[in-house]
Image 1 (cartoon, rainbow, N blue to C red):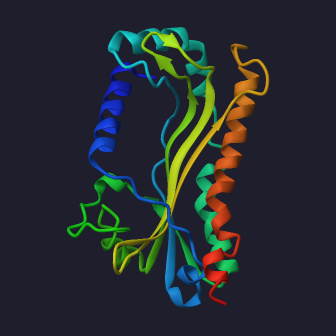
Image 2: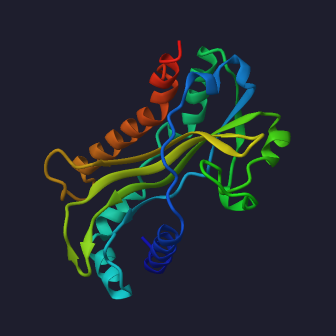
Length: 238
């Protein structure tokens, strides 16, 4: 991983965590996606680069040391494929259609940073203004699959590794009502998978590679699960 880029990302992440309270999870209900809910678009943000990260190696020299020690692992990780992760939005749309929802796959990647901030913050209100996408894509609601990081992480304390490397997939799934810019579903997804056996087997790292593909599958299932079941909130009203 690029050392300076890693430090910039870490600084931005820590600053955002300190200033913005996290959005609480919101369970998906059947009424949010029933036939009366209107046309639902399903989209994804651009997928991040598959890479290594070394949380805790905070200084420039620490990051340089961690990067050098794990150079073979980084070279291998950057060659790993996304598999069918880009098709996740199509899988979500298929599940919505099975529930009677009029679902459409948005072909474009949605760049969240390119959206304006929403003028009226509040509980369960999206911080970015998704409302212009209503007219652009002719949808009433938008399901977003946002993968924030994917690859292999190894924790550090300055120069010292404090864990074995682990496969990681982090992201969030959410649905925004484009009339109100409010969340009707919000699910943080954080998957960590260790190698079943030895991990330090260069150049192909079979144990970690297997863990990576397992993390992919578990992550995809986590995003799809809410759309393949009846929520308890909805069931309780029947």
